[in-house]
Image: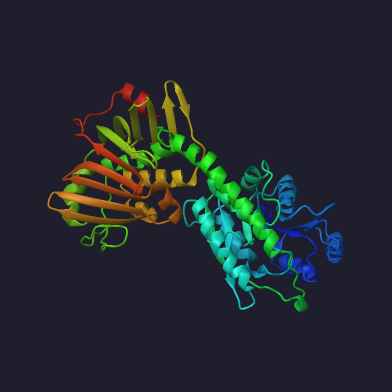
Length: 474
């Protein structure tokens, strides 16, 4: 049993039946504290839990005067938990279906990834009702369409850990998601807000009525509610979410310039790669390449790149987006100093300077410096870039799978992010060059979302002036 000052177990309960007290006891046996939200129950099953709470300071009961629905009960508990200083809550059902023994595993995953939602992936036994198993297939397909991918394994399984601040920000301003539709609407809106998902398997058991099982699911009523929820979400996706993303992407803003910075970091030193055979990602085959020491077959490329302490070169960046026939074109100069970091000077379509160094990322426009909000995907990109700048091949290999091919003086390197969430953000990075010069860099997320950077001939190497250092670095 583990106690925590940041993570608690939150159990919403509406007429949960005779298994309620045992469910709370099992949760307390695995984790403390536990917060129970009694959502206007009238069956009396809450009384043993209320009596136990009077004797156990790590069990708290919040009673709502009337039944308002699961989502409303979870949000009431989330507010109470946040007011008490907690940052995360594991939500589980009150009827014993969810596995109390899995609580420590889910909490540990949340401690490792506090920015993420930890989602249960149900492992069904023979007791699952057929309509539950088949009905969720449609919900899974709809949510994958609403969230642009497969990050959410199961949107209906309610055994999960939420970051409370993100959950409240996503759900409280809206009227939906207060009933049985809460679980699905919560993960979709958190996904839209940029909260990553970690999926963990968890067994689920459906108890028969003679075993104390109670279900408030009504097939017709609740499926109609889910249908209306998906209608709302798809409408909002088309009217608000996609247009907002569309208008943000073409600008040279923080998220896209971070990607360009990661690619242009290869100007200083593309990492040597290890072998790979052809696969469904189009990774080129190549002979095995050692990371440490570098493979002799690449010594001319690596030697030429390593000798450079400063780099200055023009570049043209073309960005393709969905629903747009012509690419957005940006031009400017890149400056790299092995000691200070990387500077991207965008001249068109608007002037700005993006600096990445040991302190992170800053956007400089005129005399004003702006630090973008923290983002785990951007942080991973920045760390990878710094590994490249420091010739830290082992560090780069922690984030990327590395592949390469030589064809005389020409070479190709492919960097594939190891984590699925980063892979969705960055896509696959391909660097083309000849001898010790980078010629083209491609970043491809999909057939309609890609970035192509053409690098011009580097200017003769020379130390940056004091004025250059003040303007383009920090």
